[in-house]
Image (tube, rainbow, N blue to C red; front, side, top):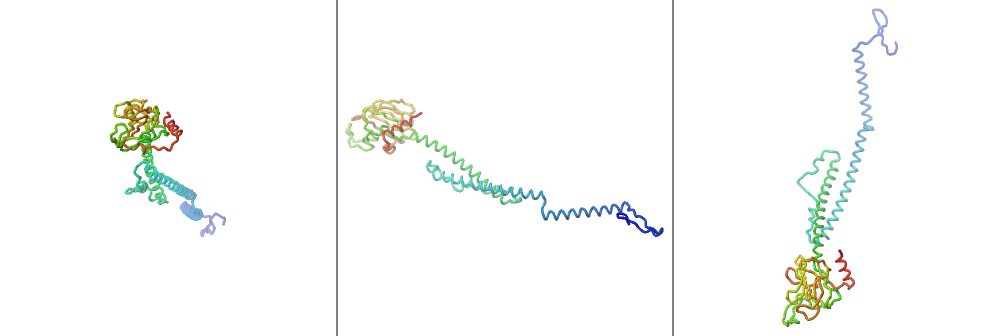
Length: 318
C-alpha cells in the first residue's frame, strides 16, 4: 500500500483495487480537517492570550496607565493652584480688605462649594471613574475660587483707586515751611487780642514773616479767593471734596482764582497781616462737613526744612 492511496479487496475478482473517494467523502474529510485546524488555532490563541495578552490590550493598558499618571499630575497642579488662591484670599481678608474697609470674603463662598447638581455624573461607568470624578470636582471648585478671587481683585483695584484719589484731596501737609513756629490753635479765647471779647479760635496760626509762601495742603478746587470782610482779610478757600474745606487767612496776596484746580503743594498765596490781625501770620483752618476740626490732627512736624521742600517738589511735578 502506497502512502496517500487506499486499496480494498475485491471478492469477485480476488484482487486489491484502488479506492477513489467520492465528492461527499472529500467534503467530509475537508470539513473535519478544517474544523480541527480552527479548533487548534483557537486553543493556541487562548493559551497565548492567557500567557502574554493581546498587543492591542497591552497598548490600551499602557494608555490607561499614562492617563492615570496625567490625572494624578493634574490633581497635584490643581491642589497647588488652590493653595495659591487660598494664600491670596487670606492676604485679601487680613490686609487689603481690612485696610480699604471692604467686607471680608466668607469662607464658605471662597471655597467654591456648591450642592444640588451632580456636575460629574457623566463620568460614571468608566474605568478609574473615582479618580476622574475627584479631579473634575476639584477643577470645578478651582474655577469657582478663581472667579471669586478675580472679582475680589477687581473690587480691590477700584477701591484702591478711589482711596488714592481721596488721599490726594485730603489736607495732609503743613501749609507753610516747617520752620514757622506754631501760634494759637483751636481753643476758646476769653479775650480776643483785637476785639477784646471772648470767642472761639477755630484754626491753627503760624507765625510767618510777611510774604511767606503758602501751599495748598491737598488737591481741590478754589472755592473763594479775595477779601469778603469777615475778619480773615485776604483769604483763599479750597474745596477738597469728601466734605473737606481749608481756609488760608490774613494773606498779603493770593495767586489763584475761583474755580481753579490745585494739587497738594501748589503755591496759592503769600502770608500777610490783612483783616483782624495783630501781626503777620497765617490762619489755617480745616472744616469737615461744616464742622471745625483741629489741623494738628492732619500733619506732623517730623520733617526737616529740606525734606519738606523735597516733598513739595515731588508733589508738584507734572
